[in-house]
Figure 1 (cartoon, rainbow, N blue to C red):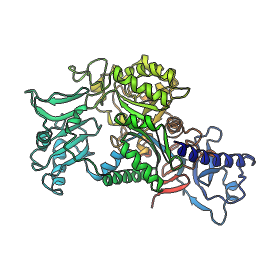
Figure 2: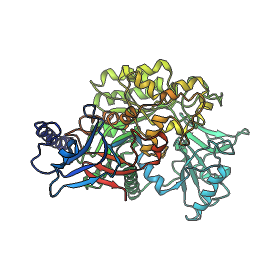
Figure 3: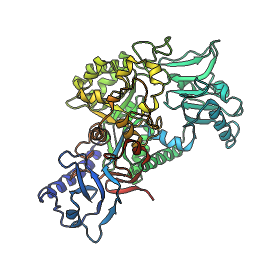
Figure 4: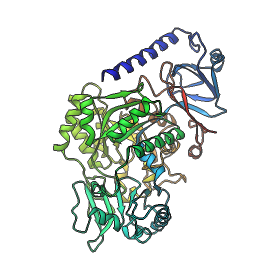
Length: 562
């Protein structure tokens, strides 16, 4: 920890010295005696800095913002060695940060069978058949991304859908939400899962009307299949992380909050960063099973804060789509269940107490109204012992009772939300919750108006992970075809300025980096994102049709569109 602090303080001191030097100059001019490393102009520049919300040019020196102002003044900073980037009309923003992503899953999505967009169970089977032809008999096939919404079969995927197309391979197909897996008969047999297998606490094994397993295992029951898929090698893990970081840069993300990060991934990322091979700023929240390792080491930071690990991730319930979200009242379309609680107070209190004592942030997955209420209850007990500014979070906060919404601000709990869930869930949330409960669903605006801080993310690979889709969902509250549903509460849509804060200043606050990240402000780190579309003025429908054209981290270009 002493090494980490020394690195961080040296860098921070240099940044403060630069900021002090620049502060002596007249507004709009730089005090730097030498030219800037990089100057960017040629398009609108939105700073997310209330003092100067829009400027014409940005100059970078030593990885930090050295100037933000008019183009004429920036011209004076162009020296013989300065790189000048012409935006050619693209819009520049502070670096967009995804406040909730599963970085390993993003990489694995690119390396395994991708089932996104499958329009039916039959199409899933066809994709599995084609993929099976490329692997050896007996090799486990893993895929992810199916969702039954709109399927003609009008049901979840089942083992019977895929048994015939890959009879010689165990097959595991994870639902898009990550909270359910369908296994074919070969995989179930290999795992020893039968009609008589009991579901573990916090999980469910779905059965048909005759009491036979369908092949779908929900939430903690997925652990029964853990031995089927071979453990990842260190080489494969490293490859998935590298691919995931490249995907994030290409979308325009300069940083991510890596949720449920395995400890092995934390060590791998730290190793990559130490070698200068981490083009993405990563803030990691380790899984509960690795919490003791973080409690022992304390907050970790390497490579000039490129990789920071300061949080743990807990799960209070499952997902709405697979009916694992924990609700006070039964599901409107399945009155025999209220979902699955995955934590108990007695098991959770000691973990929260350790986190509070050791300065570790807690990020807890909670989707249903019951799960959110229970987490707020537990936080209310633990937070008084957590120091002056703990910034504990609830991840997703998708469905909340009206009485619980003010508690976020009162307790200082951050609502870490993913706008695209309102697109992905649009066509089934009403059926699951009923119209009355939709009033507290995906209630970004209500939370903001109540004084809560809302940070924005994508939950990729649950969702696609494109920041333009996330921004669009926040301001339009419609699906990508421009459609909304009955009772979808359009008043919850955000202004463009509010949406920008989700992925910039709020994301920085949610990872304790307000002074370093989140706005184009002199002295802050030069993390920047440029999109082909002007998010602040373009018609709503045009936003998701754009693309990232430039991504910089610490002033270095990590992605530039051809």
